[in-house]
Length: 261
Length: 214
Image (cartoon, rainbow over all chains, first blue to last red):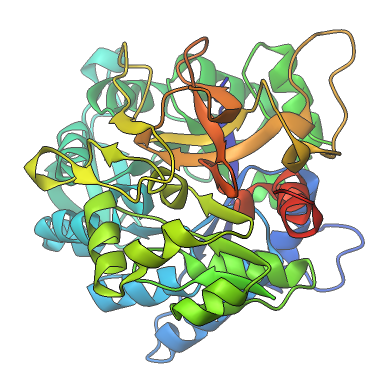
């Protein structure tokens, strides 16, 4: 049967991974290509490269990086971070990226989703949605209010999260990468209420992101939150949780997983 | 010589890189003479059926490809294009290349938990023939569950139903099989991304490159 996916996210700046890692036996943890290959070998199901470079050199270095990752790695990967033009999407796909993730650009111009899906097919167009809970005092998932934010969670986009996810899917996004800014970095677990609301509202796969700290968090968001995939960064990078151990745990909990080895 | 069909419709680069990882330098071409002379031909495809067919027609490849006689492997949309007709496309459908008799239809999810595209790793079953020999990965002991060797990566919203031509099946939703692999004479097709399916995909590709498939 179709399995749930585990996705490792690499933050990249000027062609180097930004957040440190303590993988043993990895000569250069700052090399995204080596890190990506290592994760693929360990049994991760997919990768996301999130480019946070803010220079004019960005496009060239990112395309070079995508080519190098595609050359080395034999599993699918998505590229995101400041991508806004049709020409950029085309260049990244032609360089070997499997999917491209868009965030601020499609909030500014939602019609871009339709145009990209028509041109390249929905299967490679991911819309990333960063949401922040605006009523922390909510008594339960049904009362939660979630707003879309941009600029790393600093600027409100003036849209309600579930409605924007629904619109993005209807316009042709083939997948949603849903990050709770309220949970990101807490390591207290994913935003279950938000993930469940979005998964119920759209007909495309939903990747949950933000809050992973321990194995049960993955079980909760995949089994209860209705997510099709769970993304994490630091919990993998710092070796707190190996992919193999996590998959063994999830299989034991009855979550469909591609076994390792 | 291994040829990869060059047209505006595929993630050609990923297939070239996958071949490179196996030590094979392939020729990317839309030249009929070069395609006819190749020992093996790979036909990647991604995106939407009617635009892919339009690109093939523009290059005259819609007439060349069906006449090829060496082992030929369509991947993802490249597999679907080997069929007779697809429901995908404006005007209610698209005529395809017609090397195989199937008609491509869209997944109709039975409930909100089943998403389209069918995206991610799913296990193959009912495998037939040399392409699936020696897949790496241990079966899960004593569970009867699929093991690592059975999983490959899919991304698609349309599929070919199971028929006489099916050489591998996968199921979506669980218990509802579709064609994950097809064959008629020299024409093979894989619905999943062989080039992105880890060591299992690499072995299938290696089997295609080295096997006696006619």
